[in-house]
Image 1: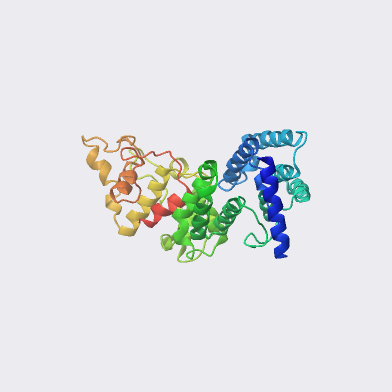
Image 2: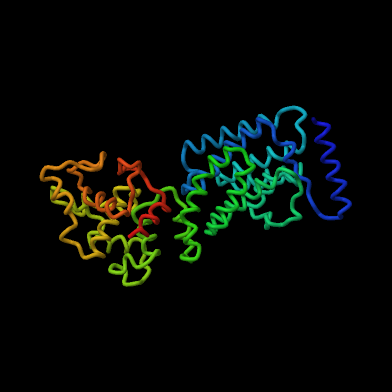
Length: 367
């Protein structure tokens, strides 16, 4: 088998020379061992996490996982007789881990090691791209080989995701997933699903900050308000059509009661019942905010707590995990009844579940 691989590469080299093109033979054929595939599985999981959470490299468990992965990579590099093509892949993987840790200088060092061992390793090319050294992943003369294309296509899709080109992202990721190992779909699948939800906004927002927010797995109350402000005239009464800062927008929304529960049987106050600007948004807080917006838009102030008034007289809650005495009972029932937010499983609402930014935008648009 080894001789066959060498023969294939030799033929490719001869072919490239005859074509007189500056093409690089990929070393991916040498890198498909079980050990390296396992390393790539771990790397892809960490990489996907950094694309969905802010400053994840500061988290203790993430740092520990990176250190463990680097140890495993170094163990593979210490094996006697490791081929230069395999070394190129391992150096590139290490460089990518260092980049995830925000250690750019170390990542650059390992890029040089990878590039020196073999110029055509696809993980090395991806590392170079993220370092800004490789400028164009669409260059047809950059790579020649049988198996590297899917990784490069995946990287192109992830780049389009970060740039806010969600339609193109979905197409590229779907293409890459066809031939890549299943763990790539498992790890990057949430990014693909977010891109699918967001692909209708490709041209609707020119604000890079908002595009970045929409890619997050979770958002704060303040970020939720910024997304709402950017997505239409939902907060026109608060901002009069102007783009307000997060702090000012939060203050006006709080003042107008849009974050206040409407079903509490006890007196409510801004200090105890309104979520803080930096608090993570849950499904129940999403329902509260959107129900208040709905009531305000429809001028239904006197009917804001109609559901609780009726059902607390002797009925029972139609939603299994939302008790009658919930201070957000009307917000949840109102959003479900008006098809703004669906039940999570047809029975429960899952109030404390955290929606992604894309899911929040989807709920918002149903208003």
